[in-house]
Amino acid sequence: MATDPTRTTTRTWGVTPLEQVKAMSGLEFLSAIRDGHLPGPPISRLLGFDLIEVEHGRAVFAGVPADDHYNPIGSVHGGYAATLLDSCMACAVQSTLPQGTGYTTLEFKVSLVRAITAATGLVRAEGNILTVGRRIGTAEGGLVDSGGKLLAHATTTCLVMPL
Image (cartoon, rainbow, N blue to C red; front, side, top):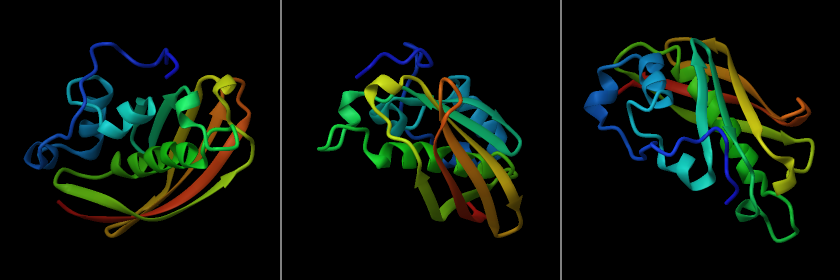
């Protein structure tokens, strides 16, 4: 897999125990992952991307697509873009949630507008909330290359619930 300048060599990977997650707000939890105080999710290790920015209502992931992400026709599989977009949008929703509250993605729609290859280099997926209520949160996201060209965009609906 390609070397990603956003990844640190000291990063640990795993799933944080639910009781620990429940004791933090969504923003506190995501900030702890970003800062390396909690393990990064295993999907990030598998696909080579990291949470690099998070604030209330916004989350940004970055990664470097590689040959390992190719489909049979020689470009990065659309699932790579979909995974980064699902992650940034859902985490944008999560960043607004109070302690003891979680979410799950109900649905998302992705539009792939440019091919991605290993030569694309670093990509950034930025998610921003549209609205978050007691039971439903919606967000939008965009995936861009290092020059700011849009590669894909998406929307999501998340179910908000007690943990």
